[in-house]
Image 1 (cartoon, rainbow, N blue to C red):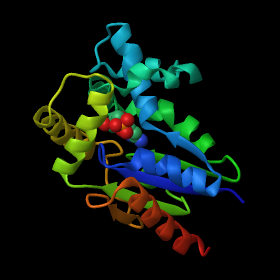
Image 2 (cartoon, protein in one colour; image 1 turned 30 degrees about the vertical axis):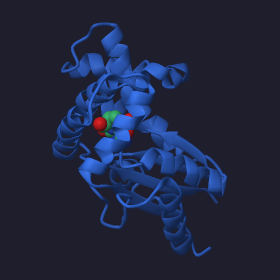
Image 3 (cartoon, rainbow, N blue to C red; image 1 turned 90 degrees about the horizontal axis):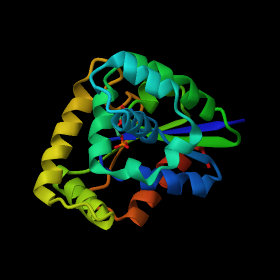
Length: 210
Ligand code: DC
């Protein structure tokens, strides 16, 4: 039987690192679904296309190849902000749906992280986690990460971007970021990555009866 673990949450909540670690712990495959939106946005940026054009965005999403997902350029703050903008388009979300649902069928199990995994992509997931942390904690984390890539920014700028991004992701009409009714909430504000991983595994083990 194949298992699905859905991890949704806010920007820089730690869900990506958590997703990778949880997948490694259970021997499951891991998909960072944000990369699909980032790669779509990046393809449009390179082609100097208008991010507010739903048809151009849907074409870019449909034309993605696996190699595009591994481009280090996807990690930048600008690409992340652009990803949040093209993610509001219904045809973009439709174009990316099948790939995510197919990934979720991989045996013995799959961990997907994103914004709408537990609510739209895999509503039947075995376990759903909703990860969040206080905005100032997330801003500090993301600032450290971006500085590591050599990006010239500040905690204040990152905090402002984060508030804007959360608000766009939560208020869009299609598949907004929200916890599924049956999601387990995990606040990582006062946890380091080992603590957050242990907390996630405790929840998952309890739900799966391990
Ligand atoms: O997780 P991330 O920061 O890489 O995601 C970038 C943007 O992509 C995010 O702000 C909104 C969008 N996204 C989405 O709408 N649905 C997902 N499942 C994953 C990401």
